[in-house]
Image 1 (spheres, one colour):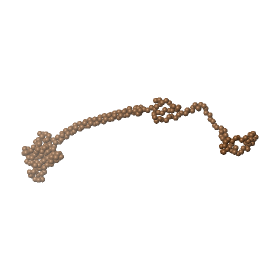
Image 2: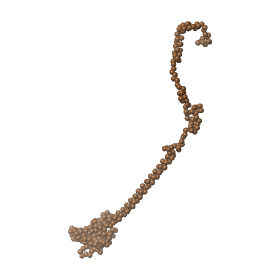
Image 3: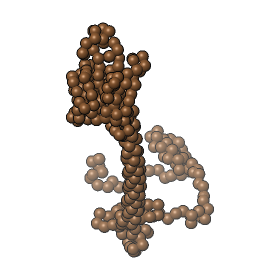
Image 4: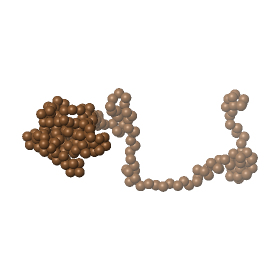
Amino acid sequence: MAQFESGLEPARQDFPEVTQEYGHQHYQQQPQHYQQVQQPYQQVQQSYQQPQSYNPQPYDNLSATPAKQDPPPPPSTYGSHTVASPFSANSQPVTAQNEPKTEPASGRTVCGCGLLILILSCIIAFLSAAVIGLAAATGVEAQRASSAESSLAALSVSGASATASAASASSTAVANIDDSCSEDPSSADKTIYISFSLLGGLKFTRYCNKDAPNAPLLSLFTADFDSCMDACAAYTKYVPGSFGNQANATCAAVSFIPAWTNKTTAKAGGAPGNCYLKGGPQNATALNTPNIGTDCHAAVLVVDGSSS
């Protein structure tokens, strides 16, 4: 390196002249380092001499090759659209047609109808259904009320009829109980009743709205006025045979209260029965006007030869 640094060395002139024979001989006698240098050179030259495949393409395909286009411009943060670069192939003038169309929220459609119109239609339909339902319910309730009034009126009429029938039946029952003394005294007053034949067939005179005097010998419940007189005849038949012939062994009259045939009514009035057997003497002039708050009828035993 010191020789090159000192300057350029002049070419040597003592090399032998190159001739064909000498050159050939000299080439064959080249030192070994020339062969080492030549080998890589030959390798490189062979690599360049290797044929490479070449597939020519028709010129028509050149026109079919799409032109390179610039990528779309990125969205701008300063507006609703981005203007392409003026040097780009995609650059176009910004017009209202290129801007995206946006519809207001109120302009949305559902099944071809506006959203607001659809909502209003649903509300109107709901209110209409509610009104119709209320009218139907009101009509049903009115019909029920009318039916209830009709039923009540029919029940009132039926109740009145039943009350009248009950009153009539009660009157009939009372007439059967007291021989019509309470309902029609003129038809029963001072009429004769003959007791059951096995009890002696005794005669009694009825006196409507009268009460026989004296303390009762016996009180009992009988089915009607006639049964009360039969009880008086039985007392007269059986008591003397058991207790001897004495003043209180004969029943001379009865007092009959038809309302006390009902034991509940009798209990409310403190009565132990509806038929009271009375001892004698008894006659029509000694009878009392009843003062017990309800009807009372008397019957007096007819003694042979007596006017009672």
